[in-house]
Image (cartoon, rainbow, N blue to C red):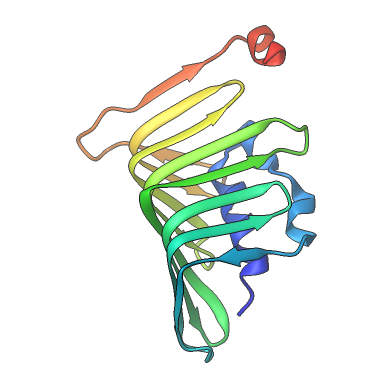
Length: 166
């Protein structure tokens, strides 16, 4: 199982536009994963579940969740599901800026290059904050689609000078 490639890609996906340049060097760092429990198979078509105080660290990337499920098909990662109250993801961009994302559930589907944050989702970086019940990011196109679920989307954009001062 190689989560080493997939989790950093997930983080990069969450952070569209200015956020998409999550620290590329993190992908080459060792991944440290800790949880209270791990269960599941190690076969090419198995799922592995990490539960209880899940902590994933790789370079500047830090993920905290209650549960992480990694699903494999034909040996490749087919889907990663992170769940928590909320899931917290923190990372620094190549420019050294902090980026933070939270949601009750985050699903990354590598084959489709889609990341879906749901349940009080929020992405925060120095230039502003995006909040919605759902945030869907297409890594191929860079398109972000938020809301459409009966809830309003809220975005706060800081002036460039203020963001630079932070």
